Amino acid sequence: MRRLFLATLLLGFANTTFAADRANLAVFRDVSAEVNRYVYFTIFDSVSASVNDGMVTLSGKVTMPYKASDIEKRVAKVDGVKGVRNTIEVLPVSSFDDRLRVGIARAIYAHPALWRYGLGTNPSIHVIVERGRVTLDGVVNNDMDKVIANSIARSSSAFDVRNELKTHDEMQELMEKL
Image (cartoon, rainbow, N blue to C red; front, side, top):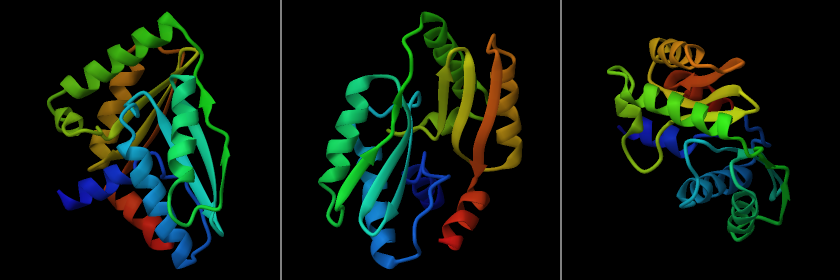
């Protein structure tokens, strides 16, 4: 359970890089926690960060413009942050995309092998939809869960599906490299 919490805490930060400096690591962890505690951060948003000498670069995609600015303000208040470069993109408004998001998320979290990922305040599988193209992001326990989630997303009416889910082991390897 502790591994799941750590992975969930780092959700959306799998592609993050920063100098191996301990100060940067501490800032990164605080930034990660701050983003994940943001009340309006949902399974339909994905935010990544990099930290270099206290300068934080935020990237990713969110469903509403206020989320990008709110997250930037929250991160700027983190102890050790000297500045924030916000490159978070706002996903376009689309009823088709909204139906895809909800439909895929419901199917994933209703599946008998995947329902447990929906537990807690910050579910670990994120469904990012932009102009009919789906990206699955987050952390799962094993490769089979990645395959099942991918299969569910591909069975939707999405134009394309990218599976960027990582297993706990893959996340641990990434964290060890840091």
